[in-house]
Image (cartoon, rainbow, N blue to C red; front, top):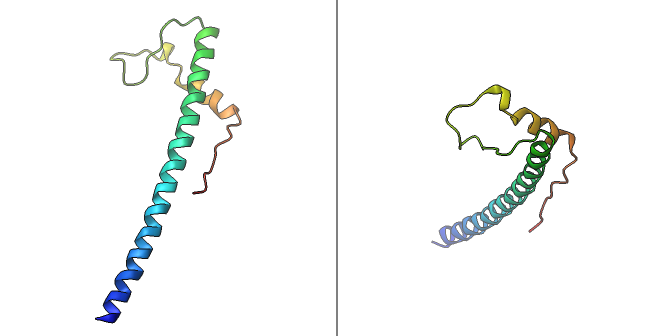
Length: 91
């Protein structure tokens, strides 16, 4: 029975480390996702101002779209040009 208890403790310790690691990864993903979304928002505002656009919809907010008014490629190109400083949190 002693070996089973020892194994269970090792397993619990390992699971705890994995849980902490997963939380750390999720926190990093969340923070960097927010950084990217903030940058996209800035880019969209700049494109809207430069192209005199009054209204911009996200991909979930429209039913019919014309490629002539789709600025997705412009956003992606501009985002790729920017040197985003993504962060890695160490918990």
